[in-house]
Image (cartoon, rainbow, N blue to C red):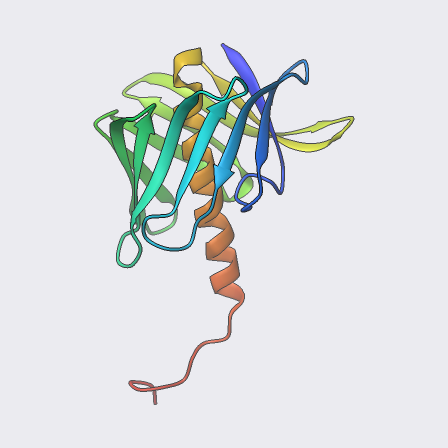
Length: 171
């Protein structure tokens, strides 16, 4: 099991984001942007090798994201339920995401096997998201999933603060 750290406030930004290990060593660089169909985030090893990416494939009515390991499509992330709690499922990998997404405390499971835990951590250099990944090979995909969940959370908060638009169909 390995632990990865991403500085809070950086995960869903359009900036370059560095993913570090518990010793502070830079392991990955996450670059890209969100907002329209076709936008993507790409995760590179510090050697420059592309290790994973996630691409927005639909925007309205059930946003979906295709997940790639290297250049191979390995899954599709979509939000399934939105009642009292969000439920996310990654087709092909058979991963489910459960927990408190809003507070960045959740886990990814494959059947009964825990793939990843996400929590907040405070280090001497600031506030971070801590990703505990069971298998190091899954780390790049887990980082991409965490970025999408943070993006959805950020946009949900942003949309909730907007004033309703009064127009056709309102009384």
